[in-house]
Every structure is written in structure tokens, then in C-alpha cells.
Image (cartoon, rainbow, N blue to C red; front, side):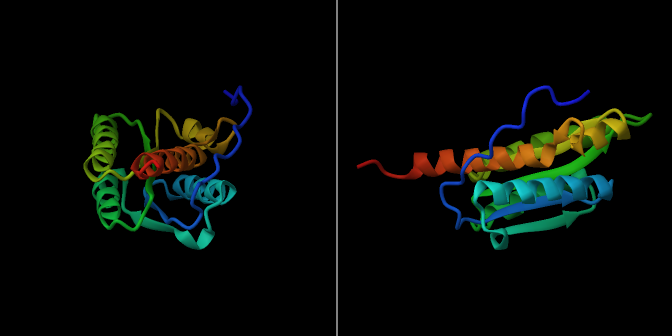
Length: 163
């Protein structure tokens, strides 16, 4: 299944001097690396100085929520991007890991007020993940970077006093 709509233009980061971090799960490292490359390249397109982007690797997607929260709590980042891959197998492991990752990353953003975006692929097969990590469907790392920029801009605007 190829991406049916054209790739949207990169959103412009209102403050190119802010910092953005990524927490990246090392399990399925080749795919996670492609997600990271997509996020890094897209953030540069959005106007982020590449020196203001940091990546922090963790063992797997189960460890992403704690890392995302710790990064957000530092106060150094305008947004934190979670990247990783969970492939469905023959056991319920997929549901546990993907559920914990999604809810924990969301909760980190809610608790800290820092946008924490979800670039975690939850796929049935490796082929589906490859298609979404820079393949024919696109790159979920780019999508998570776009969400980080849009949310950082939005929240900065909401926090800036008017008049």
C-alpha cells in the first residue's frame, strides 16, 4: 500500500533555537534507525538547527515512556519524539508492549506539558514496518517530527502573553 496523498510541506518551527530530543528503541535497530533519520531530516526541513537535536537510545519500546518522561522533565526540550518498532508475534507480548508505550508516552506529555509525540510503529509484519520506516508508505519518524513541531509551536503560542 503506497502513500496515496502527497507528502505535506514541512511545518515551520517558530523558534529554530529550541531543542528537540528523541528516545529511540534499539529493538529492530535497522528500522528504528530509519525512523530516526526521517525525524532528524524532517526537523532540519522545519528549521531546527541540527545541533539542537539529540537522540537517546533505549533497549526497546517498553523503556520509551520512562525515557520520554525523563527527557521532558529536564525542561531542556520543546518536544520529545518517541521512535521504535513493535511487530506482532504469536504471543500477547505485542499488546502489552505497544499498549504500555502508547499510554506511557501520552501520559508523559500530559504530566510534563512538553509535547511527546508517537513515532512507534505497531505492525503485524516486518514488511509493514519497512513500508512505514522510509518505504512506500512513508516514514513515521517524519510524521512524529511534524507533530512535535506543530505542538511545540502551538504550546509556545498558548504560553506567550497577548498584548
